[in-house]
Every structure is written in C-alpha cells, then in structure tokens.
Length: 485
Image 1 (spheres, helix red, strand yellow):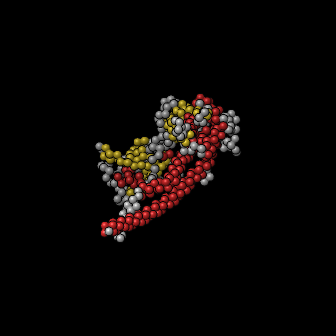
Image 2 (cartoon, rainbow, N blue to C red; image 1 turned 135 degrees about the vertical axis):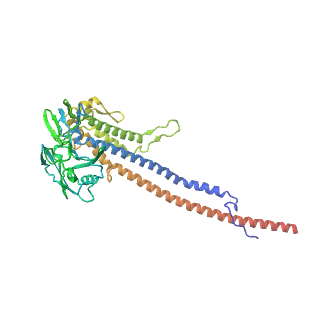
Image 3 (cartoon, rainbow, N blue to C red; image 1 turned 180 degrees about the vertical axis):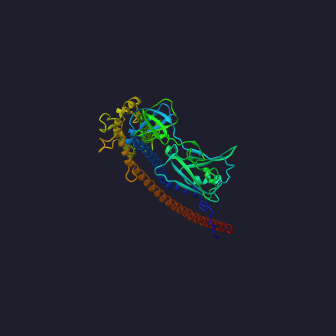
C-alpha cells in the first residue's frame, strides 16, 4: 500500500467543490456585517446632515444677533448733494436734519525750497539744523503747543545734499525732505508732514565753521519769513481748511471736520462757490438689508429642515418610499417647532409692534418668511420702535424682541456642551463608533470561521485521498487473485 500524495487544492482529494461550499457558507455569515455597514453609512449621512443643520442655524443666529444690536437702530445715513465738495459720515449720536455747507479754503502743508545746487551729491558743510513746528503771523513765529525743536546733526560724512535729505527724513521732525532736479540743477524741498496753520515750520542752521556767507554751506537751508534771515523760499504757507456750516464759520487743521457737529464728520474735497445741502437721516437701507439677510438665513434653515425630514411615497405599486436622512429625528423636528414658537408668540417689547407681521415680516404656509417692503418702510419711519420690537433683551421671552429670542435659541441649540444639536451629533458619532466596533468583532469572527472551514475541508481531503488509495490497492489485489486462480 502506497502513501497518499499531499493535497494541493481543496476538494481534489474528496472530489467536492470545496471553494464554492466555503463561499456560500461565508456569504451567509457576511450578511450581518453588510447590514451593519449599511446602517453605518446611513448614520454618517445623518451626521453630515446634522452638521449642515448646525451651520445653517449658526448663520441664522448670527443674522439675528446683528438685528439684536441696539446701535443698528440708531445708525444714520449721510447724504451730500455734491460729494466732490463735501463727503462724510454720521455716527449714532448724530441728530437727523439738514445742513448747508460751503468750503472757502482747503488745508495746506507748508512747503519751502532751497536755492539751486549742482547735483544731489553737492556738499554743504557740517553743523546743526534745527526744525521747529508752529504757526506764522507775518514774521512772527509761535511754536506749536506740545512740540519741541528737533536738532539734526550734520557730521563729516553727511554734508551732501542727498545725505542731508536722508538725515532730515530720519529725524521725525514733522517735515519731509525731497530733492527736485531740473535743468538748473538740484534743489532741496521741505514740506510739513501734516496740514494746518499750526504745523508750519522754521529752520535755523548753525555751521560748525561759519563761512560768513548765509547763502552757502548749511546756512543755505535756513527758512524764516521775508525780512529775516531766510535763504529758502516759501512755495506754500501752512493753512487751515475753512468752511461754513449752517452759517457758522468753522476751521480745521485738516480737510476733515470731526468735532464741529456732534456725531458728524465732514470732509472737504474742494472750494465751493455755493453751499451744498447735506442730509442726515436714519439709515433705513442698512436696517432693511439686515432684516432681509435674516429672512434669507431663516428661510434657508427652514427649507433645509423640511427637505431633510420629508418622506417621499412610492411612485409605483410594489416599490418602497424614500425617507430623508433626518426623517423622524426628534431633535430636528423640535428645532423647527421652537423656531415657529418664536414667530407665533407676541412680544411686549414695543407697544405698537407686537408681531413680526406688524413690521411686514409674515410667515407663509410652507413655514418660510417673506417681507412686505411697503409695510416695512412704514414701520421704519419709527426705527426706535422697530428696534424695541426686534432687539430688546427682556427679563423673559414675552418681553424680549423677536431677534433677541432667535439669537438666544441659536445659542442654546449650538452650545458646545449642552446644545441639542451638539448632543445629537455626539450621539450619532457614538453610534457610528459602536457600529464599527461590532463590524470589527464580526469580521474577526468570520475570519476565524473561514480558517476552521478550510482546515476541516483540508482534513477531509486528506482522509478521502487515503481511503481512495486504499480502495485502489484492494481492487488491484483482488484482480491479481482472480487472475492467478
């Protein structure tokens, strides 16, 4: 009797379709894992839907918070009949009304220019330049309050016109130096860094070695009015801007008049031959834009909730309907109900505007909001009342404004530790994790099951091969006996 050969492929020894049998057995065991994977996919879709729901809720909350700001309802618009002459802005403290503004003069910076030098590399002499800021009245100079003279040392390596320019600019003395080149040569130009009569300047020079000539060396950069020791020439005197507002003469060191009228800022663009009308009024355009932004955010949220919670019936007999990812989700449905309750509950924050519909904001049959522009315009003739109805932070819900309620609702459901939307997402994540753990357990068990099946079929193959070999041997021996007889 010969020994059987090793089995190289399952089923060879037994003659069975072992691989097919194992595949069929494994397929049955795989079904619970496939079901878990399908459930996990659905949960991940739910999680994604909840994430977008939270994002849309956040957008709605932020839009409501903007309308909850008391300053919004005090904003003013600034309208000029000629913005090339007068432009500006109005703060919340500005009084609504009309203003007549004319501009007699624009603010200027003092500008002086030296005589001509051969080039920017031309050298002067060593010494000290002193720059003083202040105002001029004829030949009388009055130093600027709070400002001190700035001394600039011109050393051995600093005597070129270009180096002197750089030394002046680096001293932060309130003047800016530049070199102007033309056909005659190079000249040093100095200009006040700030406009206004008080920002004029005087320049004195002290040469280390006086050459006795005021027109040469460092003394060539001296400036004082005509009639005194001045070498540099005046191109533009430092002056204030001059304007008349409602017949009152006003002055400013710059072309912007910030404090002449409480809450208003006027900026002069050019001199005007006639007065320009300026109107300050409640900024209803900004208010309406904020309201419409909220309505858009609210509608996007409500429409998304309806889309994600709907059930689509079967279209043909024998088919199944389709459930949206959040269909039947209590947290989502609860949020929609809370949004509706804010709309439907009146507010006592304003005596005249107790419902959103009083301001032209109405809810339709599909749960979304719409704005009646005419009715809103009428309500905004009294912006303070609209502000009360929307922005008041009352002691309780009934005395709070509608947007204050929406903001509080958004904050509550989005709270990172106790908010219902956050808790729901946490719960879905936990379910996904448990599902994955169960899949891993079943996959490991399935792998062990397949290993056992293969071992069993392998043993069966070996045993059947041995038995087949024995059968062949016996048959051979019986044939030999019959032949010999």
